[in-house]
Image: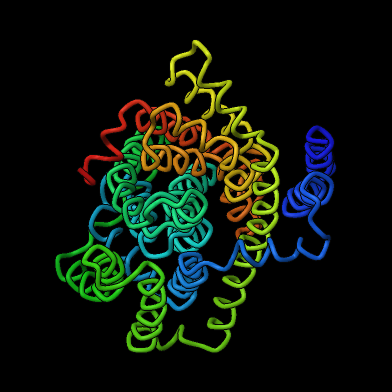
Length: 422
């Protein structure tokens, strides 16, 4: 019966059935046949999976990020960055990475980051002579920093699944996020030097001063949100709600032109769709994981792997390769929901820290956003700019290598993920 449930899940996944349905069908089969649960109890698993105070932070952070994008505050951040570094050789690509890192700290979402930054900087880059491939490739890759740099929606979901402290994950993600940003900046400057693009005209001190003052309200948001969490004044969910309120206030005060009913509706709709996708997949995963645990599959797999003669670091590398392969045809959330119930007990039994594993997992989820044929950042840029997907894929290849290199550093140097917690 265990094999039959796995076959149902795999077959449905292969033929293109939605992930939540494939997970739910396999889990429901086990629940009814093996556990003897009545069919009426199946919907309850979907409800229980989302009945979490922590998960309530997900729609709030998504909404805050979309409001930053559509209401205008994001443009102020990019303006001050381009004024500061845009005139250097390779300055605009570097500015794109820095802007994505800062916006990632505001939104927690890679798609929101890619659209917000790409809309503003890609036209500037192409106008100066940078190729479309490189312009879109760097934004697609750097936009994934929204996955790592807190507040990260991936961290929230991971914490809810493994019962980890999300505040610790947020704190642990700061240094890895900075490291990955530095690796991407170096890669962007190196790649862009071959294009012989023109330099952006140097901004005057007065222009920099004005753009910095205009960006202060937007730059204060991560200070307020993360400061509230780490000082104990607010929970992550409360800070996410405050973030939404704060963005609405600064948008109304400083971005009246973009503060429109249409932009507000667009922000809410985008947040609702993404939240619904996450929650319904989580429901299917909850049913799947509960039934899988009942069958003793995870316990037996953990015991088997622990007894192997391989080094724990080799096993971790194999797990990372599995994440990489899954990332070529699945989005980050389905990968998490499918693998965590099976792999997390194995990793912990091998002696790895839940925080370190969370950081490394998040790094691989970043990579999954730009690995074809299914890469969220790739298709977001391709669709928004109505450009052939091959253009974005070609431009992202050097940055994909950079992300893989950074992920390996994070795997084999766990200190980078944990020293702020010591």
